[in-house]
Amino acid sequence: MTHLHAGLSPETTEKARLELNENPDTLHQDIQQVRDMIVTRPDIGFLRTDDDFILRFLRARKFNQTETFRLLAQYFQFRQQNLDMFQSFKVDDPGIKRALMDGFPGVLETPDQHGRKILILFASNWDQSRNSFTDILRAILLSLEVLIENPELQINGFILIIDWSNFSFKQASKLTPNILKLAIEGLQDSFPARFGGIHFVNQPWYIHAMYTIIKPFLKDKTRKRIFLHGNNLNSLHVLLQPECLPSEFGGTLPPYDMGIWARTLLGP
Image 1 (tube, rainbow, N blue to C red):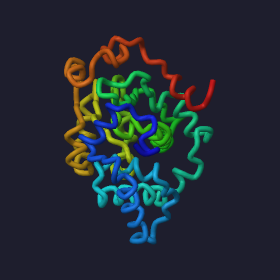
Image 2 (image 1 turned 60 degrees about the horizontal axis):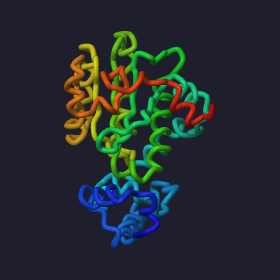
Image 3 (image 1 turned 180 degrees about the horizontal axis):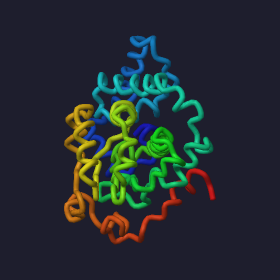
């Protein structure tokens, strides 16, 4: 057992072996092989290359080293191409702080039945005079950076639930193809997280139309993990047990407190 497995439960270690092809005996070798590829991309500044960091990318790509290196390169390339987004990438940046305090994202304390962390977004809470879409995306990416430090979550992954109740047509009109593409690049192509499911609930017809526009930018694997439930929470409960959901999603937990995650990151 290497120091890289410190803090992992025996169940999660076994899950990593079975689902992600992780082998403790060749771990350092796997990491080094990815690190050796860095010289092939002198155009990218790889600002972090330690073992712990590279390991999260290997886990996100099931230890396929070529795919892992592609993701690692895209992670830094995305940051280089969107410098303005990452210039002040910390919790006390005013834009990020505002988005966090408005509940973007919400992070449930209780994981789902597979140990995956559940992130929630209540779309109608987006006050466009207060938060730019970019700041919300930055707050989500920063939250994921904090969460992905946990090796259990590198293996178990994440679930995202977006509740579109009361999301107006006017709000939706601000979701331009360009900013949606930015979100897809940031989350799907450039971040080492395993998303086990993206669930839309209570979505109006114009969100279906938006989904049709972004579908071509989505990888097959991502498309298969997007579920449009409408107002049928029973179909959500087939995939996520009510015991791990707040009452807003028909779960048995109390209503979600919007400030919990913001307080976790920002302090009281």
